[in-house]
Length: 78
Image (tube, rainbow, N blue to C red; front, side, top):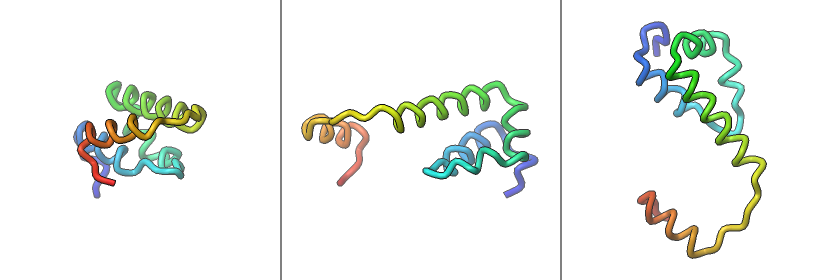
């Protein structure tokens, strides 16, 4: 993938597709440069960062019913 000519939408998809437990991806200087050139990408990255941080630090038990409703809402199957 040629990261030099990505549209904002392609860059956002690329960022999202590379999310995972290991976020070393975001330490890549080339990605930082691409993201720093777009306010939309900066906002998306900050939002993802906050979401991941909340997910990792907020430990809550979810009822089976709530879990099932979420799975149904997202259109996922277990």
